[in-house]
Every structure is written in C-alpha cells, then in structure tokens.
Length: 136
Image 1 (cartoon, one colour):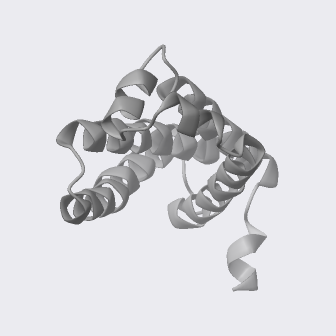
Image 2: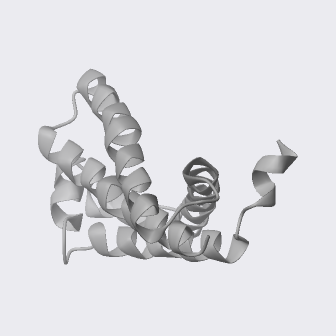
Image 3: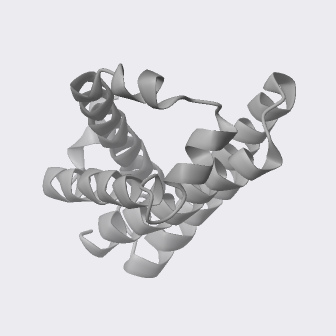
C-alpha cells in the first residue's frame, strides 16, 4: 500500500479538501439549501445550537482529507483537470449518490433531502477531482 501514497501531491489534497469544505459551507448555508435542509431533517433551533461545531467541522475536514486522498489514488498519475473532474463526477454519481439513495430509502428520508445531500457531492467531487488532476 505504500506505493499508492507515493504519487500523492499533499498540497493538492489539502486544497481539494478545503474546496470541499468551502462548498459545503455555502451549500448548507441559508444562502443556498441550509433552511430547506434543516426543515427536511426536522431540526429545531435549539438542537442546532446544541451542536458541537468544532467537532463537526474538524471531523468534516478530516473526512474531506480522506476523500481527497482516495480520489487522488483513484484518478491516478496521468490525470488531467478534465479527467479528474470526470472521475470525481463518476464517483459522486455512481458510488456516493447511490449509497445515499439506498440509505435514504430505508430511513424514509425525503426526496428533497436526497437531492440536497447528493447534489452537494455531485458538485464537490468533480471540483475536488479537477484540483487533484490539474496538479499531477
């Protein structure tokens, strides 16, 4: 497995993770889908205020780093901006969105919530892939 990490550009991984984090901040803000998302989850203002935001944000960034590392390994050494974008899109559509969809079907979450959450990944994974691909 050591060989898989040899070709990783760690700066691009950090930038890609930061981009995903920034997109999420905008995506789930009141400017875009935050209000609808909160409503679809049936969260109250009180529940939102009780959240441990440093833990949530810190964990999210770590998970974004992991996603960027694995996506970088997946797109390979010969990636370009365009191929990285397309690999990110394929990952978002074929693996992430379908996984979310299966989970939401069984947990009986709304179609609106599915489109918000899956849409976030469909936007951020191609951008992450493009960032990683352009720095190969």
